[in-house]
Length: 360
Ligand SMILES: [Zn+2]
Ligand SMILES: [Zn+2]
Image (cartoon, rainbow, N blue to C red; front, top):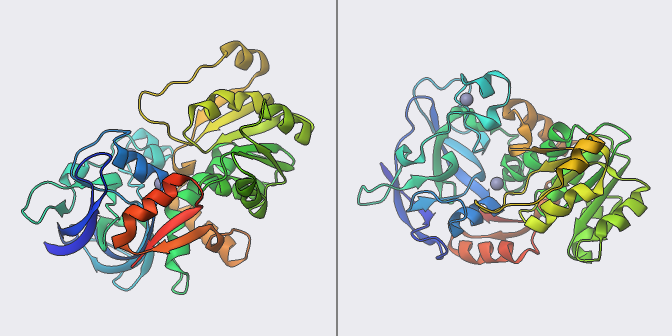
């Protein structure tokens, strides 16, 4: 065990406490990564608010990049000194989901109660999302990391771990957008901007963003949206259909707000689908008229982490970034120190930020 500093959640809804904790050395098949950057994702905030339950105390944080500093027994092709992104995707490799190339919905999720973290007194400390990355170092399975180029800025690379793959993957895989189709993206935050980038990469004809402010719609345009509609206006789907000239082939919901989910089908063209990406709190429900789906061949589908396969898709996205075809640097709205994590979380919760990133 070594001592590292981490931001610990002791009580849901309370500020995180930056303190020393104990981290085990990497076991067989694991690597230790000394972090250079970790972004704040809305999922971290939902967990810290108690929206989805879970054990306490806990260390959240799952959108990270850094340098490998130790490798466990049996780890191949990864070495101390390698720079990597760290993801929460830890497939077992042998369940039906993994066997069908859907590792993001692996049926054997890791048990964070038996992870590498302990309190200094030796008590349990939950290794949230198989990462625990609001910390100076993490110990994760080698399958959770993907190498990145030596010169890539860590605060840009870390965004690939969650927000970028989730948004781009939702457009490319879950929505299955094809060239010439039309997309609506509800929410132009850290995930929504990437769904917009994904729709552009897929060759969408028009990409319409829906958000609460003109500032957010301007952000959306900078990332490839062709049109924008203010969510708070009366019947925004009417304005959207007017702008597109028709309904959308895909509506990607990137926020967890129930009104966004309940109105999403109204933007659809016949045969279109709603892609559910934003994660409301457990127990929240939405209402739909099933007849509208049955009568028009429309559908709804959930998308977890963009349905990506990280070993295939993160190198793809790094290539696009290096070619100037995928924006990452522009997603970072502000850099913070670990000691400022509660201020960074408050700024993300306020809704104006694209991505706030803790740098080490
Ligand atoms: Zn996330
Ligand atoms: Zn599995």
